Length: 252
Image 1: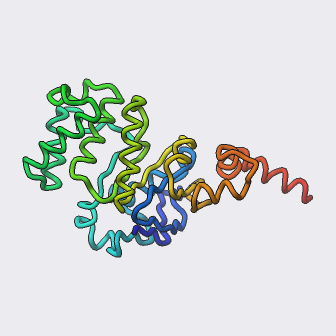
Image 2 (image 1 turned 90 degrees about the vertical axis):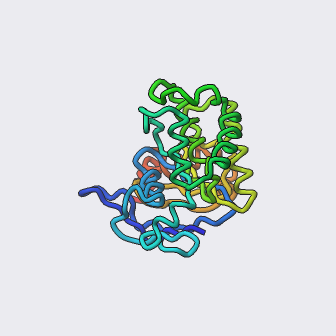
Image 3 (image 1 turned 90 degrees about the horizontal axis):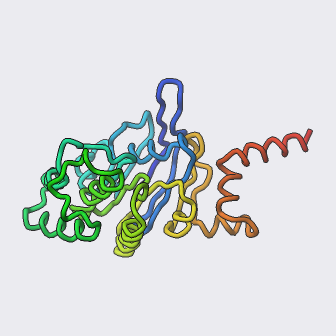
């Protein structure tokens, strides 16, 4: 179980997260939805220790993140929101780096690389430099590195972006299988259909604030005659602001 407890993050005068409190249970796929700048990446980067919250606590399986950072990092595999990293390395060198960081044996590494590179059609590209890859190939390279140590917690920031249909399908199936094993998958997306298809629970953020936390089915039940897209836009988009304005005018 992962808990965010009254987490805040400020950048100068901008508050990127405002008193975020939520729980992510084991054995589920948990999705973050929100417009650009809503706080999705800030939340994810706080969990994977890229940034430090201004205040509040994050715990993983009862362990405080600040006090047990290295131990928790070993439980997490992270796909960042951009795959443009370690561009000077070959794909194989990048996977070697990840394997060393997670202390995989040579046999473990070779077995996982064979399995994952085969799945994502990257076997013949292992000795090529990442800088020469397309966006989709860079995304596959990072994904393979993330999944290489088979961590308990997958944290995926827009993981489907740039993937071809087959790779996207395979990753979604892997996400489902990982959660079915009692492990945790956390991902952010802008694609509502993907969230509806995959998520056991989701959190919707708007300007750093949590405006919904629950299942997709519960959210749809609140407005039975509306699509998820319409409901989401009323809550998080300009439709929400317009509706609030109309309600205020009606009250005057």
